[in-house]
Image 1 (spheres, rainbow, N blue to C red):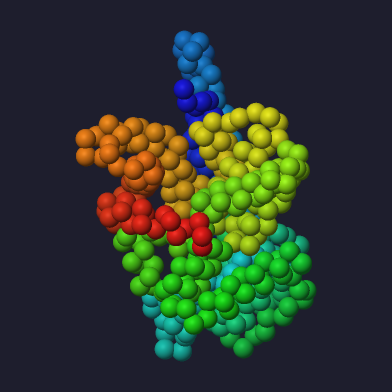
Image 2 (image 1 turned 90 degrees about the vertical axis):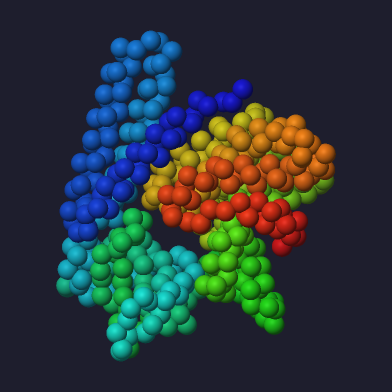
Length: 429
């Protein structure tokens, strides 16, 4: 029997966040988006209230479901509305809409990503490097505000970007952001300087050193192989070429070019296994596993699939600590609910959606597919390990199929044998 009590509020919260963020994103002007976010969140709350009133007219067994859906819808919409309201607040929203020159003090929050520009003027660089920063102060037009906002910094030379955790001072021109989780884009002026004000802390420095050490160890390795190892082990996608990315997508192996939930499962299994061999008590095991999980997220950077898997891992570890058990659907629903409330911008991320759908497929569809393979005349004599591998891969493919079609991505069953062949190499890497 599947425990689905949390599924309905989780789905409703996800839907509420998607509606608010998508609706607000239809307006380009961040100042107008600021007010629209409250209108959309308020409308969702009214729909939730209508569902509660409707529940009073329905049989008793329908009322809990409608109430939980109403609660989830309002929670997700209000969280998303607060998120959009915060990142489109004045005066930064007005400065970005006016494309004002600004000076920023911020902390580097991620790795620099270099992108090819589809069209560039003769005097412009054909590539652009972007990095996420978190501001502490923004100055423009003779005014300064102390505000914590996520901003994308755009520079021409990737060598200018320091390691994550570094506090910097930089000047440039603000412009509106196209992404729902970014307040603005700051394009650094040519010839201007990016100053490092403070070095990264010990945790960030250790993570950066490990990532750099892996890159150095891969020197001399075949480029595509090196890119796969770096992406699969620590989420470093800087070595990946466009041709490799296209090939992995076509074969259904794109999840292997970045860190995913499988990495989190391996980390927790190893840490908990070692802690058990050392005969540590359960509270100590959970604390050590939580610490390892937190550092792993810092090491690989908080990608959507990693965030989803990490939250699920935290829920399961807390269940171990309290001596209880949580079913797969309940853990997944709890993770979705927590993520949508804490970081609603992930609700509209394709990567997050694919991660959730794939995990749901593994939990809900794998037993049925495995049972069908065990009964089917052509497959019932296969080794159990092969049957299980085919069942897991098929379940994930079936679950993510609707999203892949919506994304316009290529869908092919070549992914099943490709993933089966890749499985033995994932854990060792």
